[in-house]
Structure formats: C-alpha cells, structure tokens
Length: 529
Ligand SMILES: [Zn+2]
Image (tube, rainbow, N blue to C red; front, side, top):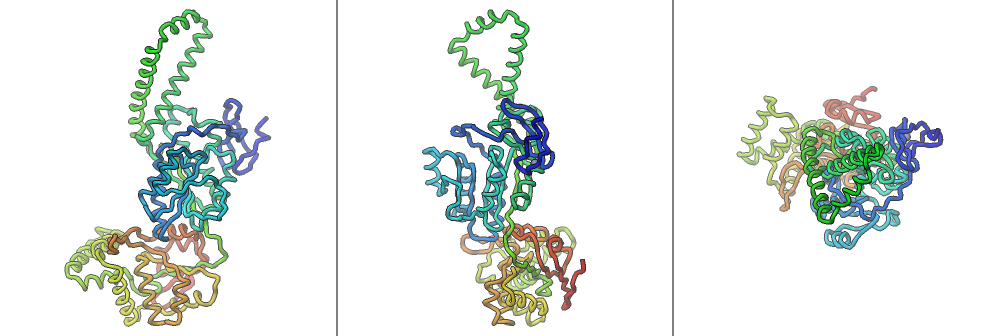
C-alpha cells in the first residue's frame, strides 16, 4: 500500500487515502485536514506562457484595503503571482497614493515592466525579504495550488506581514459548478495543480501558520467565467471523440479506408474551415451553458477565498475602555447632533424628523446614526468639528457627566505600566472621541496630556472627508460586531480588561475579554464569569 509512505504536506498526518491515479502521480486526500494533494508534490510545469485571468476576488481585497485605511494613512500591498499585473493595477487605480503597490511573479516581459513603471508598481525579483520589509496586505490568487510546499511558503510569507496585516488567498472552489457538471477538469491536475483546497484545509493552513482565519468566501458564478466553460466543453468533446475513435479501432471497422478517406479531405482550407466551425460551436455551446450556470451558480463560482489576519505579537495587556456611557455618561453622538441642531434651524428640523423616524422604529439605531451624520454633519470642516467637540467636553464637565472613577483607572493604567495597550473603543467616530477626550484631559488632568497622546489608541467609526477637508458622512461605521472586526485588523485577538456600560452592545468584545467591568452611573461592577 503506497498510502502508508505518504504523509500530508499540510498537517503531516499519515492518515491519507488514494483518490485516483493520474499519469505518474497519485492523488491523495488527507483524512485529518481534508487537503487533496499529489504524490509526488513536484511540478515541472513551464509557467513562462501562463495567462493571467481577471479575478473578482480583487473586490474583496479592495474591501479589506479600505478597512485598513480607516486605521492608517497608507497601506503597503504585495501581490504574489501577479501575472500581467491586471489585479494589482486595478487596486492602484482605486486607491492612488494611499496604496504602495508591490508585485511578484516568476517572469516579467517587456510589456509588464513598462506597465509597472507607468503605474508606479514595484516589481520584486525575489521573495526573500532582505530589508525586512513589512506589508499591510499580501494576496495570492490561484497560486497556492501550484506550490510544491504550500505550508512552508505561507509560513515565510507571514513573516512579511505587519501586525494586524491581512493575507488573502484564493484557490479553485471545490464546489464550483463546472466541476459538478464536468467532474474532471484537466487544469485541476498535476503537474499544473498539486493541491486542492476546501474550507477545512484553508482554515487549517491559517491556524498552523499562526494566522487568524477571519472569513472564508465562496464566489458566485458569473459571465467572466465563460472561458472556463469553454475549456471544459472543448476538453469533454475531445475526450468523447477520443473514446469514439478507440471504439472504432477496437471494433476494427474498416479503419484503413476511413483514415485514408479523412486524409483526402484534409486540405489546408478545409482544415481551417473545420477548425473555425469547431471553435464557433464550442463557443456557442459554452455561451448557452454559461447563462445557465449564472442562474444556478450561487456560491458555485471559480474561487474560494480565505481572508486571514496576523495577530499582533506582544506580551502586553490589552485594556479597552468603551467611551459612550462608560467614560462619559452620555451618548457623544447624540451630543454632537444636539449641538449641531442648535446652530442651524434647517438642520434642527431635519434632525427632528429623523429622530421621530428612529423613535417610531421606522429606522434602527445604526441607520439613524449614519443618516444623521450624513445630513446633519455634512459640510463641517475639521476646525469646526474640533470647536464643537470642545463645546461638548466643556458641557460634559459642567454637568458632571464624566465617570471620574473610570477616567482615573484609565490614567492609572496608562501612566503606571509600560506593559499595556490602552484602547478607547466607540461606535462614535474616532475624530469626535479623541477630540472630546483631549479636551477633557486638558481641563481635568493637564499633567497627563503627554502620556495621553503617546499611549492611548482610538478605534471607532470613521468619517469620510472630501478634498476640501469638509465632512461628507460616515466612511465606515463601527457598531457592535464591527468593533471586534476592527480589533482583529489591528492584530488584537484577546483583551485583558474591558470597561463597558453594556454587555449586549459590546458582546463581541466581552467574548474575548478575560476581565470585564460594568459601569453603571458612578459605580463599577466586576462581571463574574
Ligand atoms: Zn492533512
């Protein structure tokens, strides 16, 4: 039995079974991690003429980049297996100067080098990280399944990610509709593809390499996959003809005369015409099938995508403070809207109408806050916003709406030990929370101002600003579950201590916190668990 000698290249288990034989290769499936792999794991394939395909996963990458951009000014992105650069250059066009683009592949022709120069994409000639460069996001589309040692490769790549950096990997979807219909697809075999992945094995890969598997997504089938159906149609017809020929041969039906007869008509012109007819009919057949697949192809597209994040490597305690209702006793968002409505009569009416809709539950909290930001705050400049936050801070202090006990705990944590990450987490936009906090500290504990600037990080919703630095609305909200998403994007997967006023609102953070303090008016209760 050959299976006894074979160990899984991913989880190193010996518990593997033979799936099928393919030429010199045996294809196994690992019973532990579910990876399907070839034996030997050797590819001598010539990739110099490899075609690049447009991959819709690039939209997922764009999503993650815009989320990372809510945490930092610029992101550094590397595509591995970039081909003719169509995906990375799409991203470069989307994000412009905010994206520092890098690309790596085995071959660069003159056209690719020119394109990279024009579009300001840095081409790497080696993946060995000499300068210890760190990327905020690395992605590889349909590359993993070609690698001889995927686990080792991803382990190395992970080292090039910054803390909280994202690794996005897409592979052929094992549930793709073309596989269901055509069963065997020639391109999914060794030496071209050495491995086949599913949710199990991708999750395993993330965990074993020390990444946090954040999301796994199945693509839908769409019209851009017409090429795939055409390849399958041609291959099926070819196989059918091949079988037919063999049957004829075996039956020995007048084979000499048949072949001679065919040869007679094989002039150059008829060959061309025949070739054209074959292509045209394959194209037509593939078009009909593609339309059919698009209708049926929910989650049955070509790609399965893993989005994973690199946890922050630190030995610090993460201490998180909720802002609204915890550090201050009011909702800062309502405060800002109140102040705005006082300043402008028209905005007051708008706000009144929206809040009525909210009170009659026609719209929910999230919707109300997003709309209110859009209509009420729109057009504000950064200075005006800061001015408003100062007013709010002064108002909060004069009305005794600050939980001094919580604030003192925060100051104590920040000034006493160097061994903690202190985060103020809020659904209210970061700009608002940090300005209000700054003004409060300036007035109540001015000696703490420099520690405050250095040590405290803010996570919250983010405002969208236009080119003239005027407020446009919300770029990304940070309500409830999204708070945890943002922490993950910073590489934070565990919290040592959480201060909150609402276990339900912050439930996702409560789940990852070792100690939870609940703040009710002036009192702090330790949540027993
Ligand atoms: Zn395995």
